[in-house]
Length: 350
Image (cartoon, rainbow, N blue to C red; front, side, top):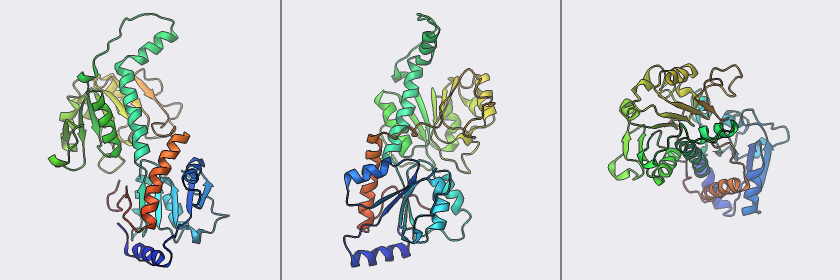
């Protein structure tokens, strides 16, 4: 929702000039989004400022007083908000928001600007990563690849089952979690999921066979073949799977982490594997990134690591075009003084 100041500002500007189109400032490592936005609407003024998302942008050659709209990452929100006094709308291209919430947690008064995030493209890429890993494991692709490397033409120790016999437990049924649930259901998998609040029956999606809360975690873990973590990093989720929590698993599930690495300690992942609570850990995120060369994770046989790329490789021209299309729908809503899609409330905390 608009703050009173922002609403008044937009009302005044729209009365003065209905064709008002503020400059879009994109701050990130690659110019692909700018190019896609210009390809869709060349009349828009788009400024690209090259910067690492984890570092403060360089405003040396920019008149920060004129910056009203920024597209970047939650990592950069604090620095951008402090440097841009007239910021009215910040759009994050990344899935997480914890760095932004960590920043506003130090403020006495919450920011007087909109904060939105990309959903469609992020959800598509991350959910496809999840289903790829599930199918690769179910169809023994890891073992087959090793056999190929060893020049072994053998069918020994290969065990594949129908995906309709697979149960997936998704921790976090937000936009990404629901997209993953629908993909799993496309392959006739049984899907259970955990939400942070009860979901009314009329609001439940047919892709999810069973909804649960955090208090139901032990029961859901006991019945699943895959645990897919998509939870954000919050006070309730940090360390959620630490200790003996995974001992509740009865079917030695595969753990796929594409949420946040701080949901479980590295040592507890190793312990869960060696205790046969889980059979494999597929980690796209970790508590410390990049994972140090001396980490115990690298040498553990049943750990498969990818470098935070579930959404990271989404830099193709088609991915940028989809992001641009989603963003420009909101841009049109912004200049027409309409409520924005995918708004993240300051009070939510994730």
